[in-house]
Length: 273
Image (cartoon, rainbow, N blue to C red; front, side, top):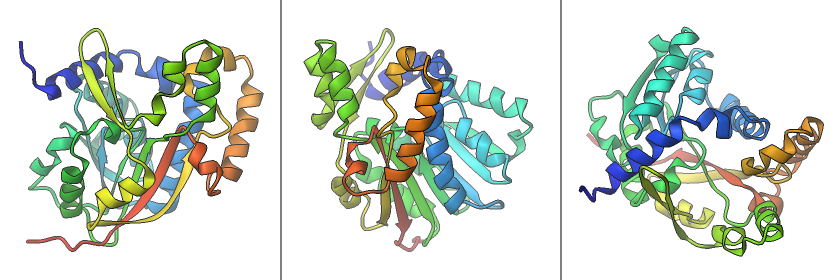
């Protein structure tokens, strides 16, 4: 049996792809997370640009941006995720603007022949599953045009909602898991290693190719998606909490309590060659 961690990760995400919409994208809470990130997309990306997306999942973000006239190369480790993404793009007539590739984040260096990108992004914690983030940062600096934005959505490390939820259920291990820098998650078919660098660590990891310009929190007042079964009965409450998130997401104290942190970098390293 192979012990290649990439194969285990591919199997894990192939399985996750089957219920991704049910578990996240199609939930009311998941929608608030997505809309929060899209608001930032609208401020930093423009029609006519060419973007690189890492861990694109089922293509929700790629199709959204392509619908605005943005061209993308969208990559994911899971062939099943890419299959769903292509189907989604085909159903919305955006296929011509998106080049979906089965490609792990660790192998984006193989995009050697691609034109330089006008920006890049990774949504919803895909980079938390990368062992060597510094190597990915070096390749991104080579692929992204100097002065262009890089938007990374990463796991938050202190989430009061999560602590309270699992503590109330008598699961202290889960309540405090975000405080651990490393973790391991397994499923029926595969497994992934989870890394939780702090914002300061991410700023160091991404340098010298990228400079952190701003960051905020996504999912502070709105609870995590695993509370959906309870919270879906209160859609007006979720909308109200999402409104609170919009007000406090950039504030220094509250942004540290978010389910996800949204880091906006600028490429400052000239492309060699």
